[in-house]
Amino acid sequence: MTDTAISTGTTESVDEFAARARAWLAENMPRIDPGDPPFAVRAEGASWERAKELQKQLHRGGFAGICFPREYGGLGLDPAYQKAFDKECRDYEMPLILNTPSFTICAATLLDEGSEEQKRDRISAAIRGEEVLCQLLSEPNGGSDLAGVITRADRRDGTWIINGAKTWSTSAFAADYGLMLARTDWTVPKHEGLTMFLVPLDSPGITMRRIKEVNGNEEFCEEFFDGLELGDDAVVGEVNGGWAVASRQLFHERRAVGGGSEFGSGNGAENAQEMPPDHVGLAEATGQADDPRIQDLAGRALARRIVKEQLIEHVSRAVTDGSLPPTGGTLIRLFHAEITELEVDTALAIAGTAGVIDDGAGLLDISVRYLSRQTGSLGGGTSEMARNVIGERILGFPREFAADRGVPFNQVKRGKS
Image (cartoon, rainbow, N blue to C red; front, side, top):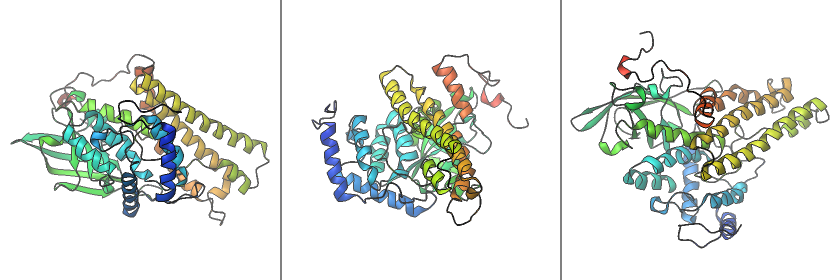
């Protein structure tokens, strides 16, 4: 490939960029064994500090924020340059935990919907490795109905006063700012009375607690807002226009969950529990490599893995050229969830009892991973909601009935009312 970037002020071809990245990575970034990558525990602060140091190194070398505009600290290059860099960096330790949600979701959303000040300050700080961004969307009683949030933002004496709670906030304990959706008008239908805020997480009025999952992980958090005060500069987009911002945020999340975002900070071997299982190696380790049934199971999972990579490429290209609407990223998100479950189920089926008993074979992590197999079906909205989006916004099917559509939110029955 020899095409040059358009409207970026560079004449460096993709091939030349890749060659320069290859030389720089070899001299400046820690080399790893992709088959045995370092384990970054997302629930530990040390992992985030390490990721920020790696990001700072990328920034010093001129390889940070490749697809973010120059005016906000990036390089302003075409996604082809990011893909080339991703290919070159797979044998090196990269700040992968910063990708989601900081870069591929929150920074990407600010790029689309934020003010000039928010883009200039927050995106550039993230690219420099100085700050981490997170999402503050889900609520304890909200389920999958994001538009039904009841965290409230009241206007008093020129200040926004926030009261309420959020939950399942990914890596919020490590973040500096969060994108928070709150209700600012209760007299209009639920989608119309929302506003998105950019919240400094060290502000008075915020209490944060870690959530312990069934597998022992404590990456997720819940936050309680008690009289949190924010200025107008915290509003992202328009007052009462928060649903448009949230919709764009969900667009980026669905692309990120499926692996189709161009805003990541590198790519490569991820944490052991996030990598696709080595089904062939597992079959060999359990003495079943010649079993036709096991070969069929492994082959089915591997085939879908290949299809996923092709789907990411196809959908990303189609959304870019307009042949699919922006919601097309939901196709990637849904397939990612389904293949994740298949991959984990297949690994446990091959491991059998060795995957659930600590017999020294080192396969117990398969069952631990099985405990969280459903997370892919929940992130970025449930898979059921993803199917609705595909049916209604891509295929043009009639919208699903909703009893609260068009009803002022203060008249909507909630809970036991």
